[in-house]
Image 1 (cartoon, rainbow, N blue to C red):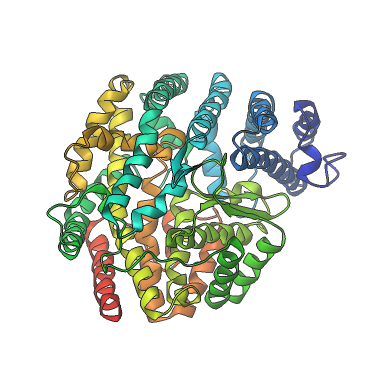
Image 2: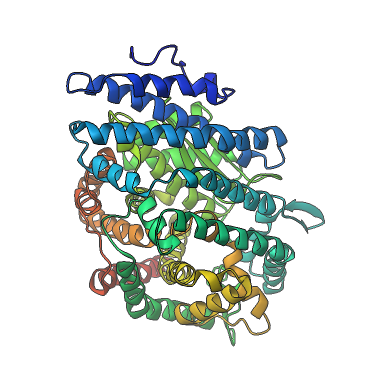
Amino acid sequence: MTILKDFPADAHAAMTWGWEGFRPHFEALEQHDLSASTLEDWMRAWDRLQRLVYEVRERLYVATTLNTTDEAAEKAFNDYYENIFPNSQTENQKLKEMLLQSGLQPPGFEIQMRNLRAEAALFREENVPLLADEQKLSNEYDKIVGAMNVMWDGKEVPLPRVLPALEEQDRARRELAWRTYVGRYLQDADNIKGLWTRYMDLRAKIAANAGLPSFREYRWQQMLRLDYTPEDCKRFHAAIEQVVVPAAKELREKRRQKLGLETLRPWDMDVDISGLPPLHPYQTEDELNAKSAAIFHKVDPELGAQFEKMRREKLLDLESRKGKAPGGYCTDFPLKGEPFIFMNAVGQHSDVQTLLHEAGHAFHAFAVYPLPYYPQLQIGMEIAEVASMGMELLSAPYLGEFYGEAEAARARIQHLEDSLMFWPYMAVVDAFQHWVYENASVARDADRCDEIWCELWDRFTPGIDFSGLEKEKASRWLRQLHIHQVPFYYVDYGLAQLGAVQVWANAIKDQAAATRKYRTMLALGATRPLPELYAAAGVKLAFDADTLGKATDLMMGTIAKLEAVN
């Protein structure tokens, strides 16, 4: 690696660099001859630099999410976005154009060249600081939500600590928990809506600078969605309405009858209808890790070894605590070759599902690190979520590590029902976002967004009684962080879930063969078009009612069989 002089041994060495630390490496690449004889060395040097820049960013981001009150971490993260991010974007654009203008193409880089052309067409110098501002707004959203504590059982706790009560049999306590949780968001509704208007104004400007009619077109190209269209998404919404909404309505009606209720209220959706207490799969974070590791070893020994590596090297931060950012994620440190999982575990079965899910992303990261060039690691979410959701389903037969047979059946029923219920909710979120950016001037008004959200909710999610809770119902979109922080990143989950159910259908016939195909897909990274990546996993990218109907039938049939066990 002679092109880059004094390159750091790891990202930690560059954590305190300003732009002046990164600049000489970009300049060395810009000034180096790029020809057929130098292409491989030049590409490998660029790969190392891209991995470094990304890893520094992710380590700074992780620090802000681990403790949203850490002012030093926030300052370092903001400094990165004010200085390193805009300059590295500009310099990376020069290198992309240098490669495009050379007429050279590294082996196995066909998809990346396609992507580079799309990114080059989208790039505008004036948008670089605006994109940095967009990330800062996302940080503000995290701060608002991360500061949400409530009084519960006589003490102040982080808001997620209220959620386990939604699974309790005591209906009055469930209602109190739901009202406490949603009410805390309502206290900050004006702050989040104020942030929303700033998001919308900023995104409209970004799209206009790029010469595009709306932010949806900008975001589509930015996300490199080159294998399907917004119209395909709308076709998927229609398929969900036709096939899944009736199945979900059937499940809700069964729930209402089993619970002996006149109507289902929003706090009745998570309690086990058998009348049994909530599942408590583990007591400590170590137990959660150990039992999950045992599951991964059974799915595939090498995957189990990768998870053990994450445990040893402290690449897991799972328990909820005050000051942590909301949600869960898996990011990665590609220079060192390590993924990292962040969660807010509180002792629920959903924590197990989240860890199985995020581990799927981690296994994907491990699989692609050996690819020679960083852009080949930049996996689209539509296939990344097949990795994560597929791992949930591949792991399902081994939930006995946490439970007895009857409890494992309950856990699998809950997971399958939640997955079925997710498709209609996904359609609400995705259709909402399409409306927002098709009507951007109107959607600046967050109160109008409330109205559209309710219309879509009623279309896709019938059977839940929100009478007297109209404000709470309308505020649900304020809690969906994807809408605010990563627009249009939600249909990916719905498409990927359909792919994952197909992986599971294959595993029912031959688990070992399905897992081999799954791992083949992981190792391809972003080196194939999206339909080919799905095909490598033994499934297809689909938007139609027929494929969705087969998946829904399998899920509903399996639920019925598991109910007999339970």
